[in-house]
Image (cartoon, rainbow, N blue to C red; front, side):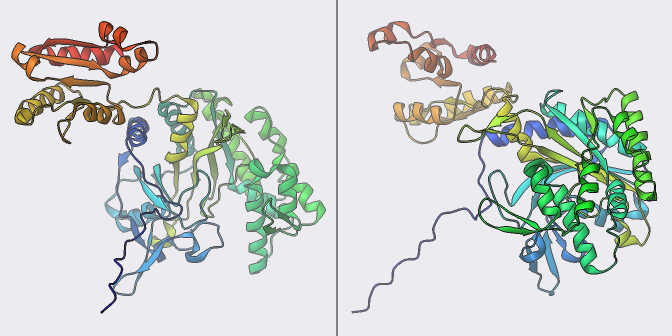
Amino acid sequence: MAKKQKTFRPKARVPRGFRDRLGAELTAEREMLSRISAVYESYGFDPLETPAFEFTDALGKFLPDVDRPNAGVFSLQDDDDQWMSLRYDLTAPLARFVAENYDSLPKPFRRYQVGPVWRNEKPGPGRFRQFTQCDADSVGAPAPDADVEICAMFADAMEAAGIARGDYVVKLNDRRLLAGLLETAGLVGLEPDDELQRVTVLRALDKLDRLGEAGVRLLLGPGRKDESGDFTDGAKLKDAQIDRVMTFINATQATNAETCDRLAGFFSTSAQGEAGVTALDTMAAQLGALGYGEDRIQIDLSIIRGLDYYTGPVFEADLMFTTEDEKGRPMRLGSVGGGGRYDGLVKRFKGIEVPAVGVSVGVSRLLEALEAKKTTGDSVSGPVVVLALEKNQMAAYQQMAAELRAAGVRAEVYLGGSNFAKQLKYADKRAAPIAVIQGSDERDKGEVTIKDLVLGAELSKNIQDNKEWREGQPAQFSVKQSELVAAVKKVLARRG
């Protein structure tokens, strides 16, 4: 007798670094993105949508600084043997779009875009391989005026999202300062190893906020072993070079003007460094005149930005408040977005330099910050649930839900059977604020019963016995069916 083959059943699981999302989180994200997009549109930016996949050669060398397979992106070959990659960010697709439509676009071309991006990187706490970004870029706009506008808009977007003034600061730097620093530190060789050393220095500086000065000094020198025992090779700088680099990083002062004064003369042998100081000084003056002082936008020389295509000012929005992790330990969420000037990106396609500057909001991290700060308000409420107690009255129940929806109230009819207790349990799982009930008794009277589920849950905590509960019932009342919408809206308004 043939042995019966075992039926294969795939294990239900999410790939590492990815996650499912549901309900309240998505609603909160949609509302937050709507507020940010409104800020972008108020500045004259128009929406754009590009495909999830781009040809890999369109991404070129502007890939993440990681030593992992696929150079940090998810790639596949098309049936014509061309390599395509899921977009790593929204900027490289923008550069391709501008190059492809260059002659027909108004310049400057101002666009914003919201969408998912994918990174083939090692996942960790709060670090996923798929996440949403919300970008705004101005292509064809020269410095420094466009940079000032983007920084101001970035600060406005943070506040529109729900981050209070004082709980964030947009930190500003210039990549030309970093180029000048490398130049004055003697890191100017042209060999591949020299370029790797410069990149290693910038990567080390980008970790200052996380590792502190001692950790950065190790990465600038021989290297550093982390808590897990993994060793990261360092830049192998000499002690004098490390001291100069750290002197630069520590030159940030309390005011933007003081920082620029502190940098005066630091780059006397570097034209790039001097140009960076001049740019920051000009931007700080304009931003101050517009009312964006150090409490909102501050020069911070430790800001690096990880991608190599930045050519001028760079900036990040850093959260200033602390919260707690899952073990109750204090933690800072840090950067929730950033950007900068990238005048060379479109040049890869067109052969001509096209000035551009943009900003990208890390939507997931910003939403996490809002939840930690509780600025998104109470948990998002579910829909009003119309209970379906009698199968032959389903059309009447659907009509009630339709009336509520027509009045702007989220509503649904329970479609899983007629068990009363099961329906109330469903409404509870849906975080429904109200259940609408109409059995034969209510229908004969032309009434409906409104059950305030939120108030009922609150009152039940103080009820001592069933008799007291039956005699009270302040969270449940009946109204004429014609008054259904008004009664539901009154309860919802009471709950805010």
